[in-house]
Length: 399
Image 1 (tube, rainbow, N blue to C red):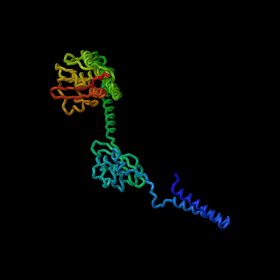
Image 2 (image 1 turned 90 degrees about the horizontal axis):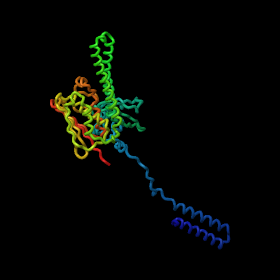
Image 3 (image 1 turned 180 degrees about the vertical axis):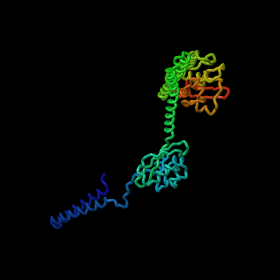
Image 4 (image 1 turned 120 degrees about the vertical axis):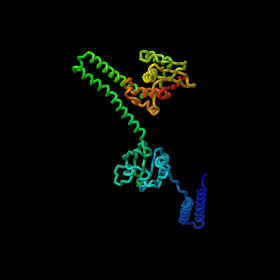
């Protein structure tokens, strides 16, 4: 549908043509009539053009897209972030205020981040490597490790980003400690073996009794190294599989019976007492669950008092779990040691553990097996009475 401006322009053109025609009929001069017609048309077009122009005063400005404020942006970041201008904190997200305190806004950066290395970086105008990280120890709590990165903006303000590296530092420390402990545990029997070999090569090898005694010690040390290497391989394999849930169906009662038969040649086999109820099968890895039972029962036999029972109990726990409990009547474990018993190479009594053939990895292996099977483990002990190790495993759900 034509607009009102178009209709008015059409009527004006028609009126101009009619005026020119009347001028021709009255005066009879064609040139005058054409001039009148052209002028009228031009006036009409100019008028129409001016009517279509919208006054600048009523033109609405095009809205400009405005981004979020800096404060809104850094508030969405989970890690501590600060904005610094002229060495003062002008913005800080909730994570930064929780770490450094609610009072840091407007403060000098040296008071906000109370760390010498951070202050040196932020106050040094000659620093030519703003993107290089600074490692801060003790910021927040004494054990925390932070990485600080600084970026300078075009307007001279600086963004300070703090990244928590405590977890990765702890992981690296565990790895370094593990390598050091494993090396030490292997070096000790190896040094003993080399020493006895050198001795046998001398005159001591001519005495049959001495040679036989030395060979027995060498055999025991070699077996100790073998057990340690086997445990290291087992631990590595279990850790590699910990995110893959086992899918076999295992009857724990039958597995416990098999383990007891395998331990029948041990010195304390007569002390084993089993109280195994009929329980549903569990979902698991047969070799790993057998290793779990061997390690827990073996520890109870090693550290329990001779002539006292080592009791193995298997019962159902609610609708979803079964509980395996192994109880010994040994000397017990002081409470301060219990949280660390599943650490690799941790021993309450190092000398006694080594003399009994322990590698320091048994309970660490048990813990990883339980975690892979989506179960739970609990250790309770009373000094002078004994220790109880309980393992909860999920029942296999039939589809």
